[in-house]
Length: 338
Image (cartoon, rainbow, N blue to C red; front, side):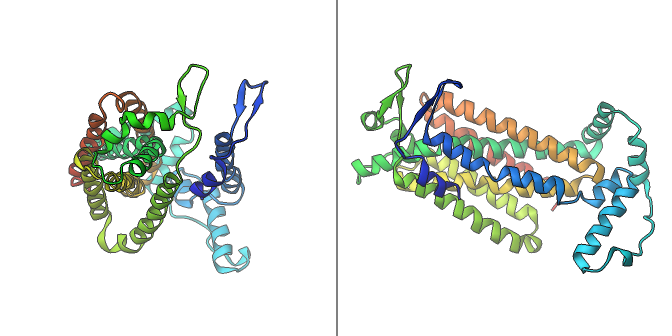
């Protein structure tokens, strides 16, 4: 949906100033507004319609809400009246009793008791592995996705002007002959701004998104047969290999597709999350996911900043970063139980 909305909005010519905010409202701002629209109904559905997991409320020592959610699930799944739900009590184990004790603690105490066990014993290696892989994957995917339109735009312009000329992706990116083509306008500081993107750029994003859909569909069909580890290893090795090939390949069109394949490292995020859930007991799972994803978000910001600072000065070094991170993650993944 996103590249479709982008094709319809981003390359339009209109703009108008909003003096109160000190900005000029342009098509790209309208595109971001459209992208944000699904969030509100999703949030409302999560708050008012979708119940909490009964296993989570059980791990919190909350029998009342656990029974309430189970009854609601029973009614929805069977279509029968809640009066026919004849479960009256839940067997309470150690996890339930520990959750009930935690309810008497304050917020910071609960957060401490949920976090510190992750860094003890066998949990330490698992949480550090999950955090590193999330950092590496988010660094690559979100960091380089930020620069996808600019890089694809330059490759498209290069291939149009030099159909038979060889060059690496970095040589194309830093090509001086493309400068005058990209100097559509200047901002207040005199910097050159690109007002329009080549149509091929949108097509490449569309291809990437469709590939994600296909890969997720295939993963959902084979993951129970193959296990998560195989999918993780194949994805990390493939995307890491594409990252290092981008430094040497001198066919711009092939480089564009290697770049897209490298961004498929995002397939690992859901697999790592699923593996993380299985590696920790219920009461630690939420914190383990939150911690690993927080480190992943830090990786996203780190990647975007570093790429922005380095890509113009030493483009090849930019692609060494995902190569090292992804291939190291490949090695670390071998320590994760299948």
